[in-house]
Image (cartoon, rainbow, N blue to C red):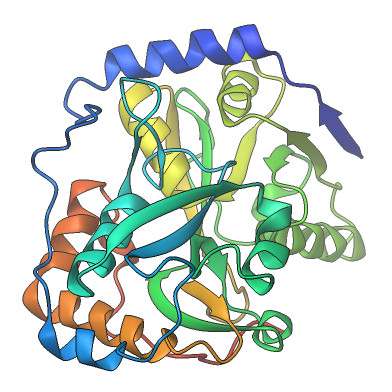
Amino acid sequence: MHKLIKKSSLIALLFSTTLLSIAQEIDLTPEQLNRPKATRSDERIAEIKHARFVKNESFTVGFSTSATLPLHDYASDAKTLIGFDVDLALALADSMGKKLEIVSVAWADWPLGLASGKFDAVISNITVTEERKKKFDFATYRKDDIGIYVKKESPITAITEAKDIAGLKVITDSGTNQEKILLDWNERNIAAGLKPIEIQYYDDRALQTLAIESGRADAIFSVNPMQAYAAAISGKTKHVGTVNGGWPLTAEIAVAFPKGSDLTIPIANIINDLIEDGIYQEILTRWALQSEAIEESLINPPGLP
């Protein structure tokens, strides 16, 4: 059974305000004074000497409007974007001696925007797939983890495989890898004579947590960073399982570029520079994403089928 839950802007606003008031230890200021910073690299600047940019002085990056912290969202001034994605993009731009220009784009529209030259790259939790590699190039920067979260008081303590989730009401995201995995698990359960999963879709992440708290849903099966952040600052949900976004294969998150972009190799090199000098780890730690660190940025690695 599939359910689409409509958005309630008022409830979402109230919940978001509550999260902000709880997250006292998180730097939500627009200034971001403690942000790790990369230095200008003459070696990388030489690599991009003949590269074409949307704007000569800037590194223009597309960010999905559907993301939330710790990936990216608005600071306390409600207009400045902050988060892991911002810190990473700034480090890449600084290494190239460029200004950073962020362009907001709906998740469904980033492929067209990238292909049409609206931005130089997209940093928005994009998983490398074989289908996407036909049209775009990639430089990886994070593991692709899906987190499974339940209400803090839930008797559920661990979900590690399909049978553990049989018969539950589970929230996921439409058109994503996590939805594909959940649908696959559901088919396996039904074939094994187990109860089907009731899959629910919400168009607002704040409402996902509210559904868990109220008992309308049993678990959230979604992008781990955002769920981990919500759990940490609200204390109302708990982590009971992690699945790689490529299950049963392994997948990674990457910066996406137009096919044949002159920036793919230099950006991968910069990410590896950041890994080597420790700035990459500092950025991950700042947003509690240490568990999703990679050892090396890869260009167009094997993607999901």
